Amino acid sequence: MAEDLTQECFAVVLVYPEKYDFRASFKTYLYTILRHKCIDALRRQRKVQTGIQGPRHAAEDREGQAAEFRDSRQGSGETENNPEMLAVIREQDREWVRRMLALKPDYRMAVYLVDVSQMNYAQAAAIMQRSTVSFKVLLHRARKKLRQIYEQEEWEGELRRTGASISG
Image (cartoon, rainbow, N blue to C red; front, side, top):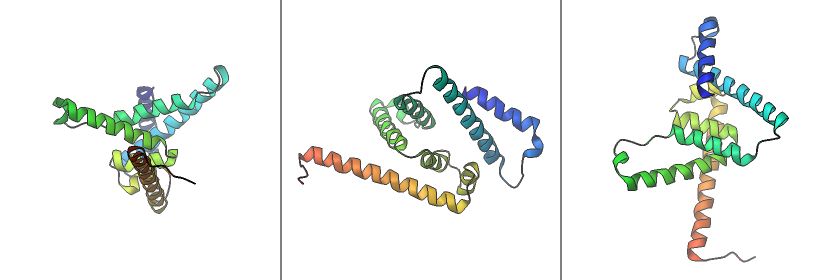
């Protein structure tokens, strides 16, 4: 499906070259087209699945999204020969993916574009069809929410380790 969507994206670029606005980078333009194609495909898929097999379960959606995030994070050459480091990195990736999936889709997209895809704010804002200022606010809120999730998990883990309980 990803390959088909990528081909469709490049077909749009080839068939409609006049739609490219040279004020934006080509990378931003390409990401925007691909994002729209993916959203359309997911909507079509959801309609088909809802109509024929009933709605998909949230757990299945989360598994697919988790795989997408895992694929986007690659280890360095140093760790490939070290099983311990690989295990640590895999566990960190699982934790990161789980935390990312706890965010709203817009928050996930903002963090992904800037922190994983290494885009600048202007490019990411263009892809999400927001102003740069609005995007910066969104990214700030997304990172703040991620920090809250992390701190909550750390706090709960500390309570479990110490055996402390909160009495009301």
